[in-house]
Image: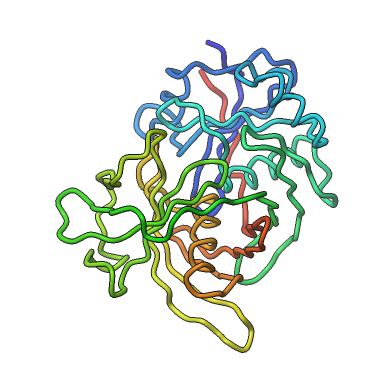
Length: 297
């Protein structure tokens, strides 16, 4: 077994992870080990696994990727795997969970911004303490550049459900299709009634697969310039999750394109997070929690 004896269960607004520190690079997990640990019946359970290690110990990084991570000042790398064992570029909520863990392990300063390497570049996390309505152990994450495709270029359907919606592609370092529903262009059920156990179908097909977000605009305060929205998400390699950080950011990008509003409080099943969209980047603010340390037998 290429796993350490002790791992930690964490979550960030209900997006839950098995995490561990690998200072020496000895514990690169196999796909089978990831699936075992993330299994909610036969393992520990999680939407994914995060190995916190040195960038040099991440075997799939190209020389250019490694150089970019080191040039960005990241001494530690978030080696993220989906629950099905597949590699992933990054996980926005996972950045907060692993940074709180890094603080506990003494490799991140709890009072200073933390530079974290990912397969989607270096992310900078700033601790914000306790913030209403977002919770305790809040971090603001600089999620980096975003790219948006043609508005409503994709048709999104859910097997077994009547109707469809139009979706917009967003690249957040990983691929997303965001569908605004409960509007004139959508005939799917309301957000709360969607059955996301079954993977949504996106047409035309995206070769890399994608996460799919379904969002409803709840309110826009023209005085403060802050919007409120509700979102649910089906993640590739995971299924429906209670929260998705990059999905929240992609949602903020699409809502900005549709409404002109750049600041959003978005509620997912795991809580409320803040998304602030600028022309060149997007910031995500939300909480993180350490749940338990677990000794593997």
